[in-house]
Image 1 (tube, protein in one colour):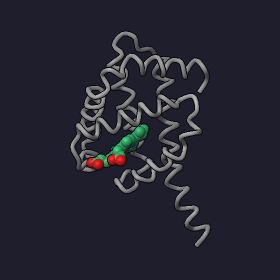
Image 2 (cartoon, protein in one colour; image 1 turned 120 degrees about the vertical axis):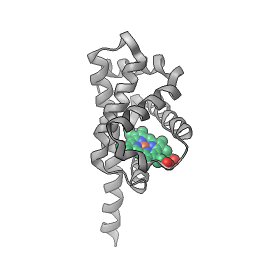
Image 3 (spheres, protein in one colour; image 1 turned 30 degrees about the vertical axis):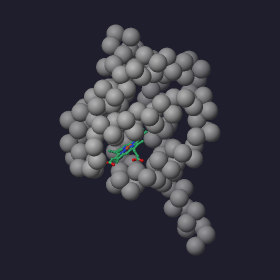
Length: 144
Ligand code: HEM
């Protein structure tokens, strides 16, 4: 991501972060409306899940200038998602609902530039999470 895209996601996050929990709840509502079949993957309390998601996004945003430094954590989160029965093809609908929810909380401050920048960031994180699942399998095959 270039400097301008980083600036856009950071300033946007400052605007929406005070509404992080309602934003996450809106994201899950929109996601389950678009993809009702994903609902069964979530067995826990959705308020807690919303908190976990937004804490993770907060951690990501605090490190957005040096994502390489938190690569291991993102890989681990990806590997954990395999246990949650999440398949790689589930990432694009999740990205769409998440970026869409952020847009709704930005109201008229939202632009196509914001949309592009967030899509770049969330798809990079998703790719890294998926990379984390294959990396594990590869090293197991390599040494066994
Ligand atoms: C940007 C990508 C994503 C991020 C940052 C993210 C973040 C998280 C976090 C922080 C947790 C909590 C993990 C824990 O309990 O330790 C979680 C759980 C979970 N996520 Fe994701 N996630 C992402 C993508 C996805 C996708 C694509 C799906 C597919 C529908 C998904 C489904 C789930 C499920 C089913 C759980 C477990 C819920 C439960 O315990 O009931 N996530 N996610």
